[in-house]
Image (cartoon, rainbow, N blue to C red; front, side, top):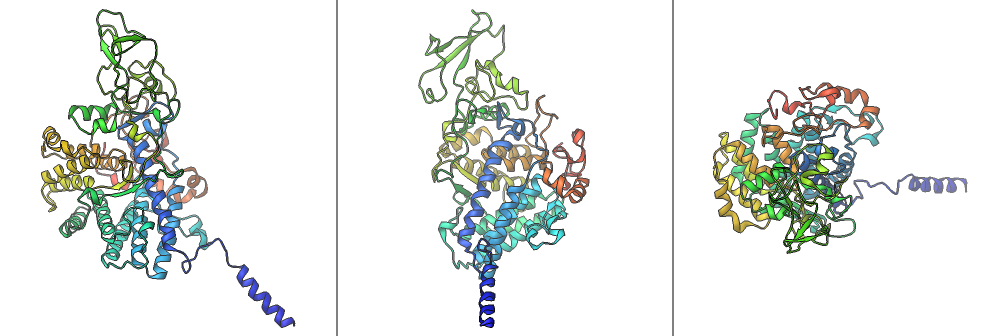
Length: 543
């Protein structure tokens, strides 16, 4: 009896000691894990490129709560969400290897490269080789050492090369197209994505590893297996569901209407008669009209030329065919009376709120004399297949990148052909491909890197993160910042977060020592958003 009871207890204890909430490689479902990595990663990339980086690259400015958008208040930035996604992704890789799922393992390797690549881009040195191992209990894994930015980039490249090889096998075992939010299980599309990311990162490294980068990119281009058409872009749709909506929503008080167009971007678009201007931005709701018969400016508004005491509500009058105007005397005051008006970058928040004579200035309030994003980008109800997507990598980016490298003498095709293809791809994405001939004549290729990067910057709208990386690498487009920011130039990195500084102090301090202070680092010293990580040291860029 005693032996039987002991054996029964032993069997029961074995069952109880299995964590019911843990997912082990032997029993995890790769098709359930995959979307839980792809979805948050794409959403995070969009949010950064649509808001903070759109501010840094002077596509947008904010009239309230704009410290991280207008003024680069990036010191102490937290990276928890990136490592959270990486932990889930690591389980996807382990499950896939345990079960021999080549496609899923390849996806996991691409996403590991994509996430760690961002960490290296934004911060510099970071936990890499000893990261994601905290559950193993060793002290070195709970407080991981930081790998160099260079080591992380080389790890990114190794993962992408391994992923590309897995996709090339064509082994589609256990593929569920519904689990793949980017390409619906298309292995060839994933191979192109992996190779295009290789091009992105090899070009990122081209100042440091010129010969390796050149030969690697030339080989990929020769294979033809990279993203070259808009139908091949790496994108994620939004479903319009309660938890899966485009992040900007019209709110006339204190929400998305605080995101206003930036003068730098508007000036570029208007000067070149860019057909994407009216896709992205509305004309000012109330336009200034010169009248030398009045003194100063009038407080009243005119609707179709008739004086009215009613100020238009941004939502109620959206899409109205009426013309709204105000009068001013240019001899007395200075206002911008253009159809499209952007806010100057980095000026004081009080100046932004009253910019161009805003009649109702306030924290985050709408300005009727400044261009806003069109309702397409602000209604919060994106549906599959429309313009509102998270775009992780595009044909436009690839063509502009290869145009630049062709100018450097790389054997990747003709620079002008790639430049024109980059413009055409972007116009196609935004639904104005029929205006290609007229527009390309406006911005005819002049054989300069500055022009290529400028058009690549324009094409990066809603995905400005890569434009920021190009700016750091090349110094283009040339940008200056107003007196609201601590320095007259854009910042180049995020500062390390408080969790690392407080709990992993020795390791993060070693990483900080590897940064190079600049004339703009200021009181924060080496861990400043204006200090240079390894990639920028010795390049003279972007300043």
